[in-house]
Structure formats: C-alpha cells, structure tokens
Image (tube, rainbow, N blue to C red; front, side):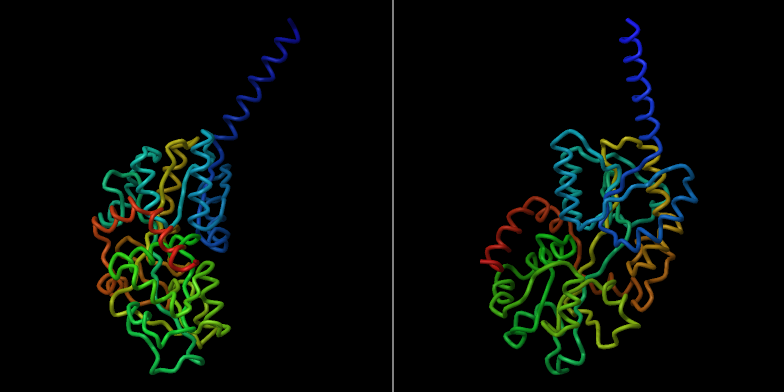
Length: 331
C-alpha cells in the first residue's frame, strides 16, 4: 500500500509540474527569419517575465507539414503559427483546427487581409518584386512586368524560388497562374528558368550571375541595399504580388490566454516595429514603410488583387497546382 501511495503521489507531482510548465511555455512555429526572432525575444522576456517562448523556425511549407503531422497524431505542440501560406490557414479554418480570436489591437487590419470569422489575420506583408544585377543585365533587356519574362530574350537569365518549399513563392506562382494560365510557366520552362530554394537562394543566383534576374521578396533585397549596390528593384507594371504573413492560434493550444496575449503583443508597437525593421509592411494604418521601400499605398495600388474567387480557387486546388507545376518545371 505505501508503494502504491508513493507512486500515486509521484504521478500527481509530475502532472502538476507538467501543467505548471505548460502554463509558462508557448510554442511558436514560424517562418520569420532567425534574426527577427532573436531581436524580438528580449522584448518578449521583458513583457512576459517568467514565460518561456520556444520557436520552431522553418519555411512555410515545412511548418505546414509539421503541424499537419502533429494534428494527425493527436499531439499538437504548436500554440501559435506565423507563416506565409494563407491558403493553408484557410484549410485549417475550414477543418476546425484554429482557435477563434480577433485581437482588439488588430481591429484596423483590412477585412481582405484576415479571416471573416476571426480565425487568422495578416501580421505583416512581404512583397514579391523583380530584382536584377545591374552589372550583368543590359538596360534594354529589362522587363516591365512579370508577363514579359516568358519572352525568349530571358532564356538562361531568369530565376525564382521553389513553390513546393516556399510559401511566398507558392503564392506568387498561384497568382500568376490564375491570371496567365499554365502556358506562362511552360514558356518559363522553355527559357531554362531555375526555380529552386527560397528567396535567399534566388538572391544569391542574381548576385553571382548564375541568373541575373529573378522574382524575390523585396525584404531580401532591402537587406542588401547598403552592401550590394548592383541589386536593383523593378516594380512590375502588371502588379507586385503581396503576400500575407499570417498569425493564428492552434485550437489545441495548451494556453489560449497566453497565446492571445502574444498575438496582441505582435500587433502592438514593439511587434509591428520589428516587422518593419525586418523590411515587411505593417497591415495597420499609421506605420511607415520599411527603410528603402515605397509607401504602402503605392504597393496596394500596384499589386495583383486578392479576390474571394482567387482565394477560394487556390485553397481548394493547392495540391493540384503543385502537381501541375512539378509536371511542367521538373519533368
């Protein structure tokens, strides 16, 4: 009997310790850059003394794969997700996998940039533009639009990231396919376009001359604006592609109250200033654009529109789009 009582007491002690640990720990799965995480961590420690914030940092598609696997196993570790594949969040909302929360701090985020039911919202906006190496690409070769890049004069010159691995590259691929069809990508393939890696890989290929022009996130270029003057930005006339860096709370969060406070913090001045410092746009009014970037009003005026039709079509055909893209570009 004493042994049984001792075992029960030990189990109770472990249980209490687990609950205490859970109440003071928040897991954030994010595609934010590691330096962004490192810079915001001290502010989190100051705002939330005694709370341990744990980050799993990876690309958007890797985050989706990991969270989906956790959900299938019934053991979800992620409390909050921040990544750039909005269509995945649409799927999670439809499947009932997100915690419903509309942060009062985010009330002025435009309706087009968040769930109509309060399940997710845009935290920041990365913008896909064209970038070229001014030492290697002649002025007369410069494109004016994304559409121009299917022209034969860009053979062996153009590069993109991989839509199968990068959320922002998937969004860009989906937007261009929606407007220009698959023939556009067949022509990119015929031009020997390289579509590999993430945005950092694209920028390296532009810098080393392997491909002197590519589509890449503006934030990646702005990080080099004082270091590599060869890098020049083109804002395509057919429109830049705005991406939604989404924040959402998992329905299986171990601490919904702490998760909500974290979301509020990220929409507050410290969180939004950090997004801008990381060269992304804030979705809230009153914030300046990132250093070296045009006003957000210019971006919105000169961007492909996020229509309900586009959002629904891509949400419902994500796998088919990836399969068709693979068939065209990699086979």
